[in-house]
Length: 194
Image 1 (cartoon, rainbow, N blue to C red):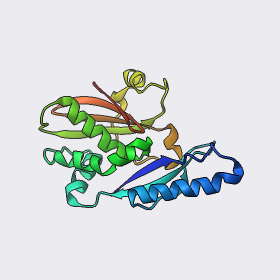
Image 2: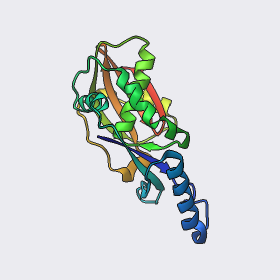
Image 3: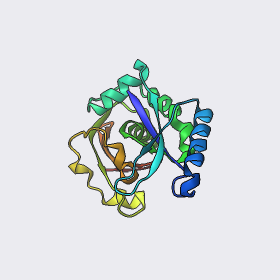
Image 4: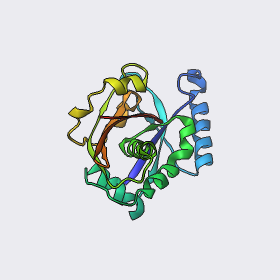
């Protein structure tokens, strides 16, 4: 299983047509050097282009794969909660670039922030529903108040990266038999009890 991270190409929209390719290549090379990872340029903007650099982080060890896979299958997790913080540490260095995240990365952010907010060691954790929405109020906290998490009864597959610039990941999670609604947009997370 992988986490896809999309870092905006700062040359896109900020350089002339003539210098874009050179500046973009320099940005890509700097990212590859900083993270020792391969990046490829992709478009994540529907309609209007929004170019970014994609890299993948593998979470293939059973330590990580088990909790993440069980979470997205909607299974109740009763242990190995430390793995979530470990998974988060794998992509935390990318956060300074305010990346767009796929479902897996957003799910990790959502769970880690939820575990911090409950302030006790959980006895169980279960994803009840997942879908995507768009940011309506340009304020994640305002959207959190208005979003109807009770409609989340199914776990949707990973959204197409082409729509990530407009995607807010919506999670309905049960932790210690209490349900929470969580919205994740890029590196921002908002949580409320439902």
